[in-house]
Image (tube, rainbow, N blue to C red; front, side):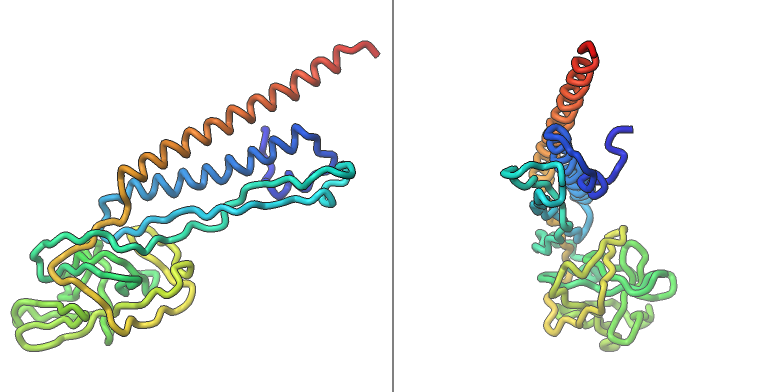
Length: 264
């Protein structure tokens, strides 16, 4: 199978020709474009997900010097490859939509709501809250919301529930807890876990002054039109690189066929 080796393995091979170099550069470009397609497709599919934060890919030039390839002659320059470093999380606030539901909250700034999952503590921007069968405050996805003292349990006899802009949950009988809102100083510490959840590589500090909008929900910060246009553009670029790789293959095949036809 062509291109079965990884990029790192390919660029470490000796006696690489000019055509091979062109193929490897194109392959590095194609690999990065494929990663970008995956990210953009995920953004598009979550354009209507409450509180979803989009990601964008960071690219970097990777130079391979002539000392890495002993077949190069003096005076030849380095070969420039394309690498994708990481998918950056965009914490730009999404637009808010008033719902009138006392249990809905829209978070602002680089903050997340802590929830309890079977895998441990996780974080989300999904502010569509509800009361589960055990009387605990939970997200619409079923994850139990954490407060300053653990899960927040509501007694139906205490009357209607309300949430203040700083996260205090109260009933007619008084406060029953405060939402655990964490501050995200470095988004690169977060990894997507699916189902609109994030895991942190290290503990996240509590937000000292959280900003919530009660009775509202935050929409995804993905612009569907822009994301779709980017996806189309990247798909076209990927197809263009694939066509270039095919032409390079044809060039090598034609050269081999002509050389093999020369009488010994």
